Image 1 (cartoon, rainbow, N blue to C red):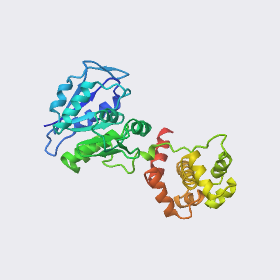
Image 2: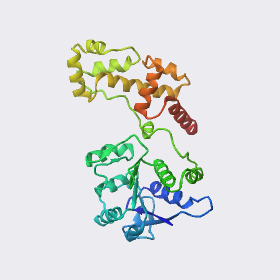
Image 3: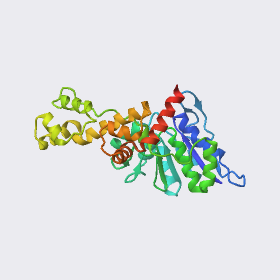
Image 4: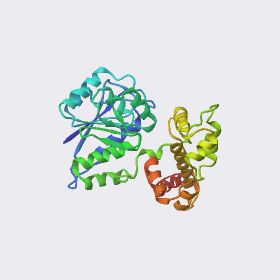
Length: 318
């Protein structure tokens, strides 16, 4: 029997807490056997979960015998008790598998176990995780990262992706596919969490010399613009343009223009039924293939899959 310990700390996110409990508890092998035993653990007798409180039936000592430890996200990751960090380090030292969901990555990062490894968390918190733990290679675009013994996942539904991945690792695709059907989830989702990030237009520094130039780029992003065109509009040499543009925006003129074009394409994919090739031309890509490649690089999925996902979402909301 594989023991899964789900650690509930104060301000635990209920969705993150419930996901591994439900997914692992409902998993069955082909012969009907139950492969996992789930234990909800806490560092104290009563845990504040925001909308409710819970009394975990297991304490931190249960981590000492767990095969897998799940760290759900928490609304407060600034105060992780030392005894929790010590218990997690001890579990890792004896070979336990540890996986985090959403901001649970901050708890795992605080142990030092993720140093030098790749990890992810909810895209909203990825920048903060990278800032607090520069020794971790934070990837904000993926649904989960599997380092073998240590795993991290993005927020909310990505916890489901992570749990299903663990089941597939333990018992194969057939068992994981059955668990996915019970969760009304695909076993694998196309793309990463980049497709769910709101890609705003690149920022225009207000009051700067480049504000008129960037506004002009936004208004003319569908045109066939070269560095020469942008430099002429800015009234400076290409060399000066590249240097000063990066100083004020953090990127190059052409990269800024590409992101503006992709954002325009996202809007058209969501709001219209125009063919993808026509949208590619409308936003300034001379080649539909180049558009698809660039779109997938920035957004993390294909234009057609993006349209299917977000037009369906709008239909459900309506």
